[in-house]
Amino acid sequence: MQSLQGRLEDIQRELDRVSREHDKIKAQEALILDMIREARGEPKVTLRAPRSNVKQTILAMLEDAGVVGINATGAVERAAKNGVSLERGTVSSLLSRLKNDGVVTYDGAAYRLSSIKDSPATVHPIRATSVFS
Image (cartoon, rainbow, N blue to C red):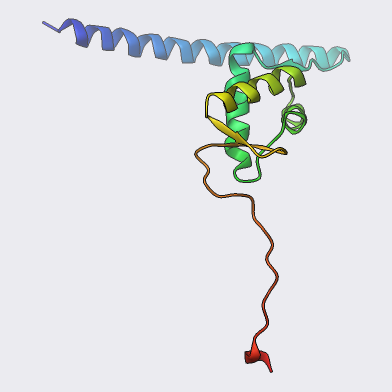
């Protein structure tokens, strides 16, 4: 007989599978609805990131930005290029909370993940020595 822990793990795996299948069907539905709207000549719907995904979206952007970092305005613009509408105030507030929680650092211009230790690339002049004389 299977242990209770084993049964719970089986149920969790099944729940994850069903959830993935549900997400797949919802994505297919959205695609079909977009195709219908396009065929009718209706304007394209601008997607808004679900509230629960705004944090994940911003964290992914911070990861992609690396040492360059991002600011609230840049995050909103980058999201818009991907078809996702974010509100600048929401992004700004989230970045501030992430800074207070120690997840990101802020240098006055850009936010970076705290796990990124390098600072932005600095240009240093080339030093000429007597080797070239």
